[in-house]
Length: 371
Length: 125
Image (cartoon, rainbow over all chains, first blue to last red; front, side, top):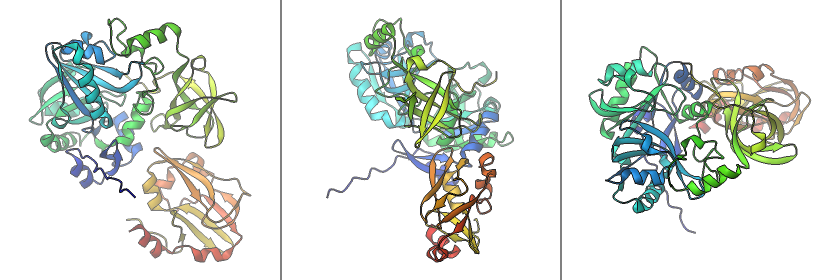
């Protein structure tokens, strides 16, 4: 019998820190990552009410530069990058010709002809190979997998600004949502971005890997009086679900189009051409037969990923994400349903381990932060 | 480090049972609650349900996962801890005090097949 090859898990620069702090570690997308420190509920609530600090250094960074970099990005990224000023970021999709998701990403415009993509950890090699190949027709542009050059921290929550400000000369209050600035954090060269994956105000901080531990410690120290705590991937998942942010591999993948995922707003409809444009334009003209919907479970029970959805007696779709969320204290989730059954208020059933359980379509996001 | 009551018996699946006469009070261990993380939902059988040793008698869900609950002993469910319905988080706070069901034993000898506290703790190492 052939021996299975054990691929060692990759480690972020903060791995030793997580282990020393007693975090519970799990394998995630090929990485050894903290799923929780003090508990998912405590960390989730910290982010909603104070702030939490996440190590998201597993995320990938792919840079695209060259005279024709904008044309290259316009071809491979669904959103319209021409709308980005230098210093601005946007959510987007890396789509197939069918308009389905190879990955989702953030696109940062670092300079007029220099872009940074932040992609999902488990897709880095595949995304990079796809991008490098697909930008060739765009002219003078090259893609570089720069993932090893960055550690990435996310400080998220209503107290994020007051905790980070003492550590940086960048005037954070002047940094608008989905804009970024170069500067320093705790005397370490950093790019600070007002973005996140939690539905709260907050910042994502790109730093050199060798300085990650120093910045991590400095932020926790600065946040001590505000009771800022380290948070893991478990809370990151429940937070993003309350905010109805899609998770690639759950809610979007190569079988779901941007329109089915109700992400028409990340499609640059005014662009001349991009990968997936023809399929999406056709689907837009003809209408989608199924669409993602947010739901609440009405009976007792928690609907989880993979559970079947029923309209009447007919299997009508499946849950793509679902949990009991700590802040809203409800069992919520997302599911693909026949488009005619996705209006808020529509009821359907979910098979929760053999029991038909009533659920209702609700508007997304489930949680919206107070402003 | 949590202490495991010496008067309880334990299963390899991380349930405990406190045997007293023909009754057995059942819960999950501190180790089990730690592994689960924050408990948000406990589904228990009805009074009158008949259980065989090792049979699933319900489910416990944390934010991140669902786990089956297995009967440490055979018997009929005579009491269910309804308080867990609204306060499932007490399983995290006090796992060895948060009983789930009481069964009337149909095979008193089964207690001998279970682990005692020191055997159970050895299993966790």
